[in-house]
Amino acid sequence: MRLLIATLLILICFTSYSLCGAPQSSGSEKKINHDPEAAQLITSDIDNFWFAYDRAARSPNPAVTFQLQYFDKGSAGLLAFKRARIDQCALAETVSRHRGYYDSIRASTLRIPSMKEPIRTSFRKLKELYEPAVFPDVYFLIGCQNSGGTTTDAGLLIGAEMYGRTADTPEREMDDWLKAVTKPVELIPHIVAHELIHYQQKYSGAAKLTLLGASITEGSADFVGELISGKQINTNLHTYGNPREAEVWAEFKTEMDGSKTSNWLYQGDKAKGRPADLGYYVGYKICEAFYKNAADKKQAVREILEIKDFKKFLADSGYEKKFGGRSD
Figure 1 (cartoon, rainbow, N blue to C red):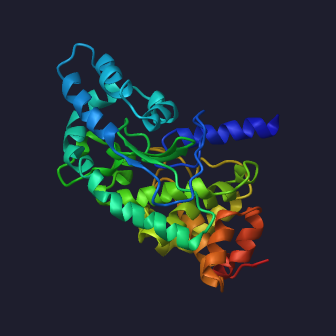
Figure 2: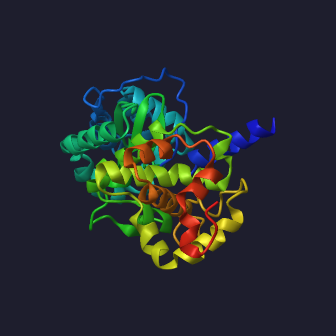
């Protein structure tokens, strides 16, 4: 019973105010595809959203318009995203309050179909590094500013509204968290790579219940995602963390064996005095150390994706040596 309760708490964290998160079940059958060329990259929901958006602006009941013109016409990915993310908010109300923001990202989101080749290139690179890789379909959707991406059995679900920011995006409509986590559309291939790595991870639910396990789960998606796409998505965390790495590690270490993640992950707009979600940064740095110290890089990628014991992985990484700590 304790394990069940703890698992539910972790899933709640993944659902609430997360820029991107680890796999969730959608209730649909999971496809197993090992061919990077066979995965579909589906953008039709973006077109449907803007069709609904224009009509909702003239409708006496925008929520009904979005239901009829967006959700009812949606892909399997949109239905899964609605359950996992959009049902946590009210889309029509969010759009109404942030119309300037949505107006500003429209052109960017319509560029996403042109980015399919760099996404496919990342898929091919993962196949080279990790032979058992599975390649799900990828759905590009527009939600209510609470998720840049997640994975479900339906595939990879990318919240495109989080990746359309331009110099014209009105910051007056954004809280501090949105200002920090919204990115330009050019990062779309890299968020796809991050979620693709989540799809590969073979970690037990129990192992992820500690702060260390949850942070490595996210940080490994950043790290291996960078290996296959050339960039990771949380550069703001590295800008803050790199000059303070020893300080961040010392604080993290005191909490890493506990189940409380709220100081480090899925914080939304609740972080004060520093960026939210620094657990991603710590997890990345541990994986980076493991990879750098490995003689066989392909085997290192396999081990990162198939961690059985996060404490042992930390010890094997040698990360603590950087700060004069033990590595065993």
